Length: 522
Image (spheres, helix red, strand yellow):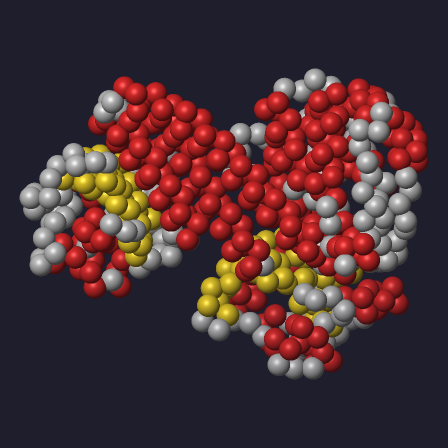
């Protein structure tokens, strides 16, 4: 006998009307996990009318094993009264995608759980953007470690080994090797150094220089003969990789980038980096490894004369600055993506970063710490990338449900950046920039000294810049009101030393408010 279709009170039907307008796929279920309604996006996926969903269950639309999993999650939410969110891969039209599922309980006026809402969001592009940024960060970190090896290694062989060790240090790449020959008359390339979990593969690797042999058609030999980078994204499907397919498969090697390494007449060879997944080397990664190889070539040559060696020290300092600039440019690019979605706050993150640095300077923070503070400010609202654009630019006060979505942005920004090894605690600074001294902030409810100083500075800078700039729902309030506001919050919510430093800067006219509107940007 089918379970009866339950109904929700009037307030729940009002919620249904709101949910039907959301761009994501949404369903509402009762306590028995029976569907009550859904929005048009979800109904379109099923190829049915919205009205046809009522009374159905997951078992009517999905495989039994998957339906059982969905209902187990339903019970967890309704019994605990707490929302859950999971990310999971799925296939759509034969292509891999990523789905984010959020389930939240629905309560009646008496506080009793009467059902739940489930929201399904395709986050494939977000995951791809994050993965691309992470791959870039991995390559940049390998480059940075290589630059340190160039300075620290005293002998050439030590340098070559240090380079391979640096590339595989975080286990992103299972194998890095450098091979070469002392002159073009040699027929076989020699492995000069190697590192990684698949290092045993390098010890049995046969690479022939002769282009008329099968071993001479591989990516490493070809890159040396052609003098250009060779990248193979699927080793098992490459005809030129035939002699090494079985061995590569046994070590889990799926992709390679090989870059010629020519350090004068005494070393002609290549740097090869292997990955454990297909399509692992993006153009950005390849570019970073090409730069890394150029640095290695220079490092080898510089050690062959004392004068050149001294010049290499200056080069490494320059490369370190380039790396830091690359990190800044990457973060600025991420910030611009958010600003394109929210024209009213275009430039807000940069202006907050600028004011935060002025406050930090006033408080005597060292230059390196100020650098991390600035970069944190540039992307402090990165987490808003998951907030619908129509909420960000809404010309009126936000509904509590909408504001709850916005309040998630510190945690979202933290999750995006937490696995990237910056020289500064940028992810934690962003996560804490809405925390208050008295513990009334979010998302962690931290208090006092548990909040990073950089976060306390960003909090004050964020308040001042927001109040002195136009917003969709109000005109700019001005510097005087901003000063009055942070004075009101001083001691109780805001760090008094930070507030005092900020007021000194504002009273001296060192920071000019940026009154930005949609019309002004046109």
